[in-house]
Image (tube, rainbow, N blue to C red; front, side):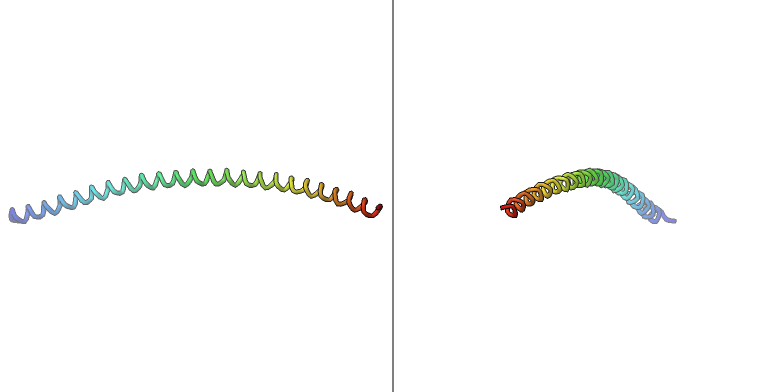
Length: 87
């Protein structure tokens, strides 16, 4: 192997090593971003579950209030019907 071939081969190997180092660095950055995204998604899921629980609780409370309102309206209708029929 001539010195010129050796230098050329060495330059190629240096370029490959540099590319590998850059690739490894980019992979590490991508992995860190992925970890942050996974944590963010987990946080969002936790918040979504909390909202779902709050909505369920609110729906139950509203159903109870609607039932009480229906009961009161029915009682009023009964009073009005008795008043009208008894004249």
